[in-house]
Image 1: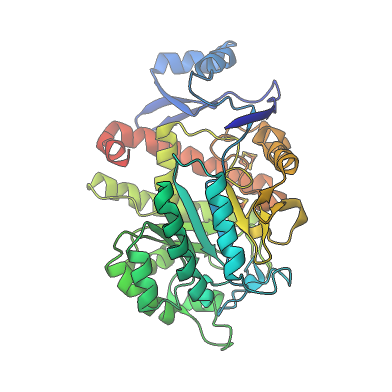
Image 2 (image 1 turned 135 degrees about the horizontal axis):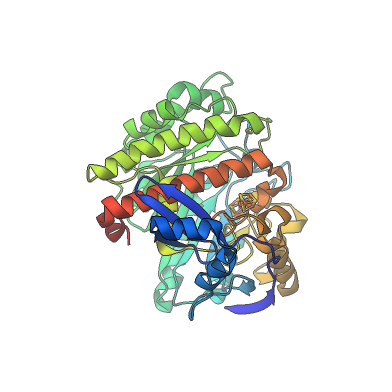
Length: 439
Ligand code: SF4
Ligand code: SF4
């Protein structure tokens, strides 16, 4: 991993966040996400002391073996998503990809040659000691089923002599799954993300079938995914719920998804939507209430010895426990790239056809453009984020959605992380075994 630049933090940036929970007083040291329990007298002293900032700076110093948070590092490319299909059998109004065609910028589906050369380039650039992941996206990737199957077998044959730890992922609407697809997924470490927006009524309204204007896709999805939910084999299946400003009632929707047999459900609010159904400023408070309401139910499950199914909560708790602290929200342009049907390498799958995100072609990355991309998107370079206590947990949130950031949407993020910090302190006091099991 090469360090190519440093983006200093403004001197006034907050170094700590003080909070209370049901089990006492706590301090989050912002750099490296270190959480401390405080005695009441220490908490009172920190709240008054002029030295608090200095204390937090010392507690947050980068330790040996940790990456300095100012650094812009260029990691090896470990993950490549292939935009194998430029079409979809659904017609969701909010779709960022225009059903896979990206407003005509990806008019044709990917060929076998382009996909295979992408895999070759990934394997040449990856660190063989770390996992390597190939993802399938679209449109609906199973529209180009033959290519998905071909690439899985091709990649496995190439990876075996190299001794690579090869993994796969696919994001699918679940309606086209056939027996042979299920066999392919089950037999491998396949992260399968199924886009599902809730109960049949909500889902069918948001995700109609493209060829039948009035007909929804929920029944086809439920039918398609059932065998995999029943027996996932080595695959890991999760539901991804998209929340629009019209569907803020989360509980009924999540219950309907769990009733299908999903054991992991992640929720994503729309910040940018093709049909303008993204959340507005007034929507963030009800959305937070809905999400924390769901999270409370999951925390109750942990108290009963059960697991957390809401991935937003499970991931946040894991990150806090590990002291995860990153200047980037994702691997875009770092360890992760997305290959378009015409062989161009983009930093992100949502940015196909966007020149600002194109960092290479035919397996050759442009080092200087990649460096500039990473430098510009470091969280210290984001005006609002540099002065935010949540900066290494939120990491500025998705680059694609940064333009839609508002005080209200950031207020939601900080309130949610505050909730998760409290939950973390409470659970680590009452149920430390949860974190031992999550390790
Ligand atoms: S996106 Fe908002 S909440 Fe996240 S780090 Fe930036 S300012 Fe903070
Ligand atoms: S930029 Fe946004 S959509 Fe793209 S990989 Fe990162 S988090 Fe995902």
